[in-house]
Amino acid sequence: MKILVTGGLGFIGSHTIVELLENDFEVVVVDNLYNSKIEVLDKIKEITGKEVKFYKEDVCDKSALEKIFKENKIDGVIHFAGYKAVGESCKKPLMYYHNNLMSTINLLEVMKDNNVKRFIFSSSATIYGERETPKYVEEMGRGKTTNPYGTTKAMIEQILEDLYSSDNEWAISILRYFNPIGAHSSGLIGESPNGIPNNLMPYILKVASGGLDVLNVFGNDYPTPDGTGVRDYIHVVDLAKGHISALNKITKSGPGIYTYNLGSGKGVSVLELVKTFEKVNNIKVNYRITDRRPGDIAENYADPSKALKELGWKTEKTVEDMCRDSWNFMKNNM
Ligand code: WQD
Image 1 (cartoon, rainbow, N blue to C red):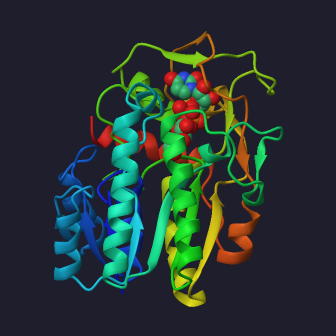
Image 2 (cartoon, rainbow, N blue to C red):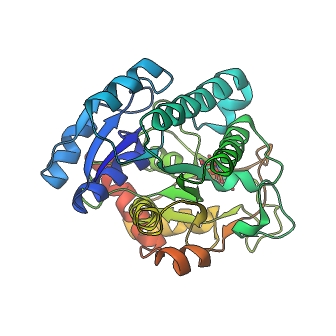
């Protein structure tokens, strides 16, 4: 089977391509390199020994997509391409709505025109919004999102539900990621955000490597065991494997729309992650407690039981693995 991966040279996309190749899928990648590097192609080849066909195009460019589908017999699509910085989305909402929505609508239209109806969408736990309970389960449905980035994810989930209602030939899987961190054990691919990081682990790595002086811990007065924010961290390789399980499911079960939480089911606090990182890597991470970050919630983590029951998927890697692999990648790429 030949799978088109949009945004495939990014953090999660590249790890998913490695798993696709190792499961004998053929892969075509489209990426505009806005938040990724062309060198990742060589790293994927070094890890798997396999080539992928690469198009440096923007998924907002419909004619480029038409060309890709004309030149390749695509059997399914995994769609990662999209802007994903929460803070930036608040400053530039139109850029986020235009890019994330138009790219997806273009892609679905070209898929429909070519009668390609297997689609896996990269969604996010952020669509749940703030809930009375920290444990999120799929049946809760979408909540009130707190930023334009999260709203684009929620809107696209709605578009997919409406698309399936209009045409039951579609086989769609919506994957709601919790907090992906870690890197491939080779240290060849990982998360290398351009500029100042937004998320916790890239910030820890910058401080540990001397790129930044101190980690600001955004509040220690939350109603959590140590007062700092609790999240469900998932190793990016576990997350990538979840995409293979979802792809196999829609291939086997055929048309339908299936939504899954991809998380460990375990909440870890900011300070727990910092302490684990220090212990596993025998390195000090300077931090200071500062005010809460606006928009942050105290705690959330996945109920991952539906993915286990229906996909036979669950996380296997530990927080220690995530901390070790993240640091290993950073050391290899400093
Ligand atoms: C985690 C915890 C912070 C940075 C976001 C998106 C979500 C998903 C993952 C895409 C929180 C604390 C952070 C720092 C800190 N992305 N923190 N100091 O906010 O849970 O989720 O990224 O899908 O959609 O919303 O992740 O890593 O930013 O924060 O104390 O310098 O670390 O307060 O408790 P978040 P995060």
